[in-house]
Length: 254
Image (tube, rainbow, N blue to C red; front, side, top):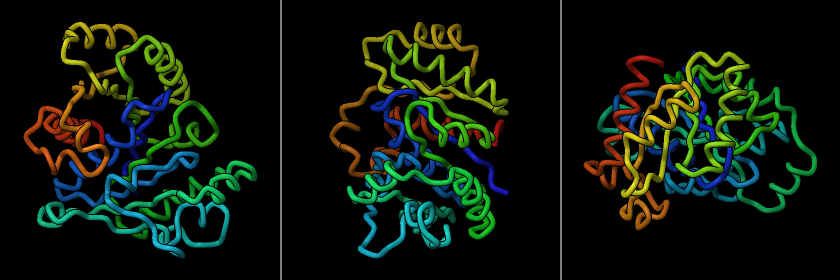
């Protein structure tokens, strides 16, 4: 069974999907078989980072949750060439970007238990080492399930007051669900912020290990979700932090 890593944030705009795609790539660069499943069904976007858009008729997670398409048919290989050279693989289970499909899913809902079944089926069918879940921000039934079955939860936040308050709720929920491991990731850290002060505040606020402090970067803003920073800017401090996070997770958690 693959190790499950859920990437979550209490609010949108934290860079959660960007981190998910780049972390998956960093893990696959170490020769791992990795799948990413986009459960942010109301506002999917992780597929953009991999340069993947489903063709008409290509199945997405929606077709599995609200139809009879096997989940493995919804998984599409998106392995970049540098990852192939490292003998890694990445599969993506995207959510539909079609507005009618999104509206239907939000209106009719779906059996959350099917999502649980999908994770185990994907792991077995693709012989995965790791499965990353890009969750929906906030707290709902889907995020509770993703959190409950995760081997590790990454909570992504920005260093502002609203995120500090909301993140406390996410951490409390995770602890009540007995998640085996939790890591904090502070993203979009302005250059004028004192890194050590932020580290101390986060550590004292939540009592949870810090996985990474990721700087706010003009380079990443220029990339604008048009690619993977760990490949486009491999020596950038942001990319180095993400690769370090991947190594730490493999060594001590996953």
